[in-house]
Image (cartoon, rainbow, N blue to C red):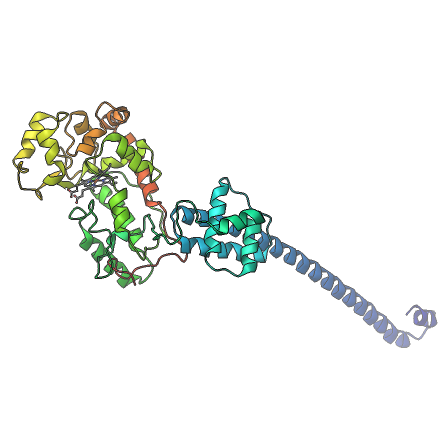
Length: 411
Ligand code: HEM
């Protein structure tokens, strides 16, 4: 280019100069275009590189989070004694590890890692998966060998699996080959209102089939009933799924009895992770509802820590012999209002059930009952948070359980 400029410079023939200038301009433009293009290519390569790095980082973060969530889920299901759930969470964990290989995981309770390993090893996994899990759970070869010959603690191999959570198991009807929880001692002829849940469920199914679980409906119905009767409200976390089974034996063994003394009541709630304080707050639910004569007969005829005129008033509807199914309100002061009168009654020795009066009987929970009896706002706040906690008891999520079409039977 410089050569042709030189040859043309100084020429007086402007007509001849024009095409040369044009040519030069064109060449310059071409060069600019090329450099722009290569700049673009470079920029695009850099952007692609940055994007690739960014997506790698995101995938890495996601896999790490999912991996640790899978471990938490596996332990939660282990505590619910849900073997199938444990195995499926561990498979998720291994899948995340495959995407982004992880270091051995740490967990506060190493015995639980050992239990996870045992359960997984009994599920007949591919050897490479088992050995990778062994590495991730940080279990030595000798321990792994020893563990594979044992059962996990508290979950004997071959034991019937039981799930205990907020999973609508109580709504399942008995069938010819299945006995659910409805007929377990503490529930039989006590738990009522299943038809109300059926009505809600069928309306929800018509509008939005297969989405809202019976367990969520129950949790919402509990909150809305309290609100309808003038009590506190709370936000119900949703997304529970329904159980595909129920436990007659757990309903019999785990539900508290109205004949229990305070120490057994505290133990029964503590077995489910509740403090004595939460137990007292939750018992405030007896601000509404009724009990059958059978449940308080012994108390009104034989106990001493009961207001005598209160006992007398109950006897006409609850004779010493017969009348077992006759109902009386759990809170005679305001039976269909959700308030703190239940606690005022206890302070006045007017608890209907033996277990109710145990909360105010010279023991460690007396002061809390007194507080609730004079300060409904404190009771409401404690009740609401304890209800949320109860509704969060071992819910089934993800691919566990199902959304039942009818709350009375599994799909
Ligand atoms: C502290 C341990 C508890 C014991 C020993 C107990 C026992 C009982 C008993 C024996 C009845 C009467 C059942 C019948 O007569 O057939 C009853 C009714 C009732 N309980 Fe409890 N309960 C306890 C805690 C709770 C909790 C934590 C709640 C809910 C948060 C609750 C909610 C109710 C309701 C709503 C009723 C009335 C049911 C109706 O009217 O149909 N109870 N309870």
